[in-house]
Length: 391
Image (cartoon, rainbow, N blue to C red; front, side, top):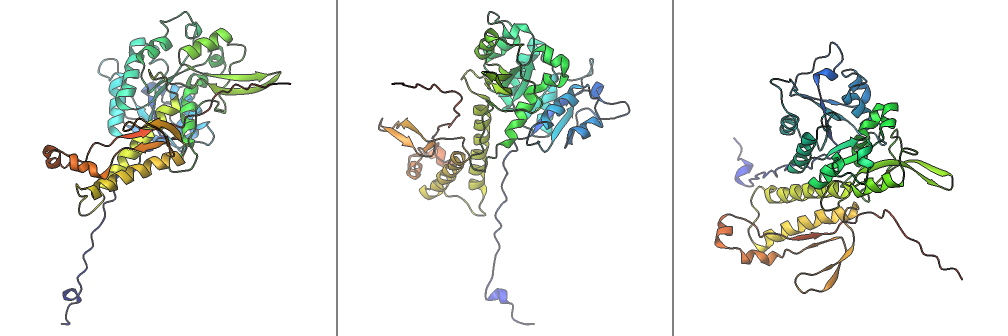
């Protein structure tokens, strides 16, 4: 036989692990019941199906069912979302699951960001509070739409909106639609579903793609006109409730805009703040994980190895400046107390030399130094005052 070339030049292939990908935040679960199905359609409990349009949903669910109504609002958004998922709730009165047990089953089976439940579920205050707590515990937004006069009464502090605001959960998002509008078009009960769908326009890896929910135009969502007055508007703002209304100036009317797009957050956050921070957290975790694990050898617990992690995290933050989530702003340096400018909306305080300060226990645990990053949200301008001096 001929002399093997491997004895002269041996080549070993070291494959790089693929790592993990980013979460898809343009996804959602609609919770369904067996009673929502059309006659003759079977859909096993504790399973889910994906649908690419309201026509597909209509093949399985009655047109007056909450599932179909929610899907109508989801797919009415422009641009149209790619799909929605439906989870079948085992709601048997004797042996079935509670709504929280159902949400946990869905969350364990498949990851979807938004969760939409039938309106009658959160009519019960205790259940609504459980949903609110669940939303923060799992970092899944739960948008709901309320109606009724108590919500727009500034003197009421026992209505569901006031109760949920007192809870202060960041991922609970509450909207309001007058009952008369819902009576004319039942899908308006789920207007908040379409507001959630509007966030699929945000592309984290794009440039200037971040959005605010404020002033969004939601095709098909009816804006209130005569149904709301100044007292009602003020009450909704005070209670952090989203509303959909026409905007008028000297007889010119903008038919429907989203106003007061806040979450129930104790921190006074708008809905886009909550979504943006969820996405940023995911991208930092994914990129950091892929850096540490994305080598066939190892990342040294050395200044050089830690510098690579710091650079990876900074590049991630820089992308969120590019997409519009973070913005240039001033900050006070915690080291020297001086006012400085964060050019790209973040400051990574970690230094490669920080590894020299690791304890023996940290070294044995092979743990990099704790990294502190200041992230400054660009937010959005929602209002302005103009002063005109006339001579």
